[in-house]
Length: 296
Image (cartoon, rainbow, N blue to C red; front, side, top):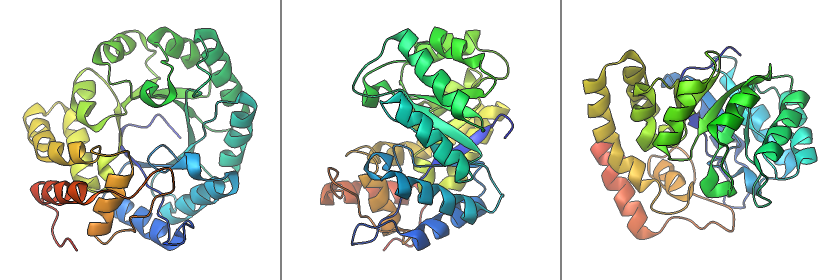
């Protein structure tokens, strides 16, 4: 996997009404994403409810995603835990499942310091046979990977980039100013993607691309090409849907939208609950504004 550029979808994991992984819906979703032109796929991330999948389920979701993609786009697999030894196991499991790359978030709950983060990610990268992308999302993990730590980790031969979901544009600017040329920086929040791209970022790992992959990719490609008027127009068109996707905890709203589109069920695993009626109505309005037709 060369350094990825462009738009990747942080895929949902469809479930049946009985709570099992819906492999058929997942295969159809992957095939549609690829046909819509998405640049890469991310399985078993936050949007994929990886925290409520057991190790065998996570490996199976990645294997199915790889099989359905059929080599048409790279597949990046999430591998996150707050126990470094378990991350090492998960990284190996995901490499064995056929992933082209690994996405690993900062360890949650135990809140390590800067040196602990470096050692944690170094152990994960040492265990990997594939490029590893760091994932900084302090709102979920309670710890922030500062630019200096990310640059230290970039020296590792298998650490290829970072998904930056801090929402801190100043921090992202500082990272872009000091990163090595071969270390990719991806926006991890849809709404901030254009700003990150305009500052020299390499792409977006997107939630809204679950629903509108072609439009989201068009936004990213316009940003990468420096076509700011077109990118701004696309961002304005998609912003209501980006906002609606986070009226409740991700991915309940996204799954509700995909259900309305006839793409997948809206089942989530506890402790999450299905989206409320009010959120569903907001999603329908936002999907309509984005140009999505034929809603159920």
